[in-house]
Length: 398
Image 1: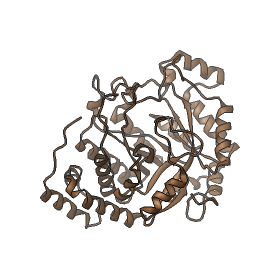
Image 2: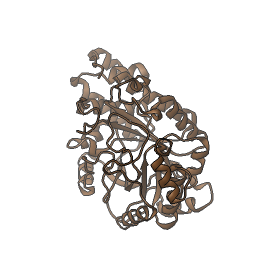
Image 3: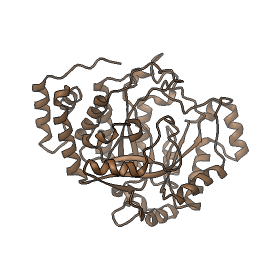
Image 4: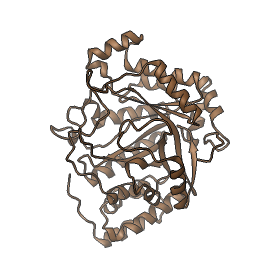
């Protein structure tokens, strides 16, 4: 990883002075703050928390979900991933429609409102075994199958699909938007050097930053509520983190469609190529989240609590307003060694930080009108799931 230079205290003070103007801070200020010394961290966090309170005071939200790993076959070989499999590997699996529906219905009984579809990126382009599986199921491609499974969940349950299918064409964004109120693609980083041999995105053709930015932009052109974010600790520098956030900000300023920005931290796993890689520290994570809040003061900032245990409640001090998807039923298949916090424990820790915990839908309240403006089953299901505030219509407290 690139060594982090420490910003002098005078430069930190100057950068924090920008915050009081109640506008997004500049790139220069962000670069100073993301390298601030420990002595200045509390002041940075206070500024970020105040910015969050100006945006959405008193509340942190989460989405109660089921995690549906539609297929873990993938043509990308990222250095930090344990989710992906080759055909024949232990645990390689593509869910059947019956399996998808069974998990969705079980989640419905537990008060879930989101069906998160995660899957490898176009595995049929690399593996004839996936082409045969799709043929047997009756579909031309993984995206055709995903589309059908989103529609199945939408029609047969009260859950709302949120797919994360990788790179998408304009046509596929439109098709998936007809069966899901929101979708997502992590930008991860704008640093293309991570595609180099031995780097995190070596042998990962779908992780080219320009291609991912193109998908996010196309979603903006179609006014599709979109989730994206950055992954820290995979070989990028603090400057890269700032530039990734700025790329996201630029697209949102142009199209207004990015409903959520995730700040996710790399965690070491024994079976990955990056097994000996250093993890981001607690301070790295808090600085990245706080700078994200100050660069994006009017955007939803999320950080996964299971990846920052046991200190995850400190993220509330850094300016997040959302914990992301939490499941009472299914594990985090991307990070199976990091269990979700129990929802009651999450509620207590959130309240101890001075915030109420509220359940949202996979699409954020301020983006619901973009979806319900179009008539059809999706609009009807979304209206039925939302309360007067655009959050999840539920009776349970957490």
